[in-house]
Image 1 (cartoon, rainbow, N blue to C red):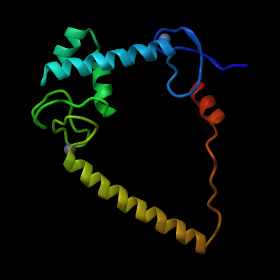
Image 2: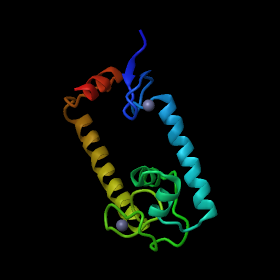
Image 3: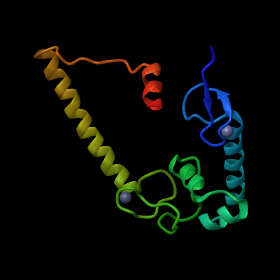
Image 4: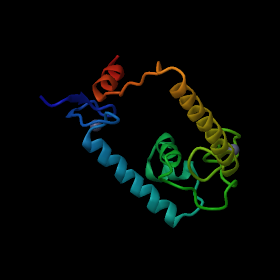
Length: 147
Ligand SMILES: [Zn+2]
Ligand SMILES: [Zn+2]
């Protein structure tokens, strides 16, 4: 039995293959929009989100999502736009979630945290073996999504 779902965007029933429950035609539509934005930004470097949104009839949310995902990048000097800001310090960025400075800081933080974790793991290995892991099965994942 194929797994069928209602598309999150249009509500149509489709056979689900994983990831965000969006039907193939809506996914295709998003790709088309993505291409349109890319072309528009190429021809109009430095265009504002409102301009792109108005000219292409695309929601600002979707544009921002592409930017956050790093699929789109704002053309022009970093720190000069009002489209996207660093989630950490609020400085204007061209793509992604953080500015370069915060990214560097966060990376350092991640590395420190990762070092601590690996330290912990090796402590556990020499000490107790009580730390249990569980493989997150796709079925469990789906079930939780449905709740
Ligand atoms: Zn759909
Ligand atoms: Zn920042």
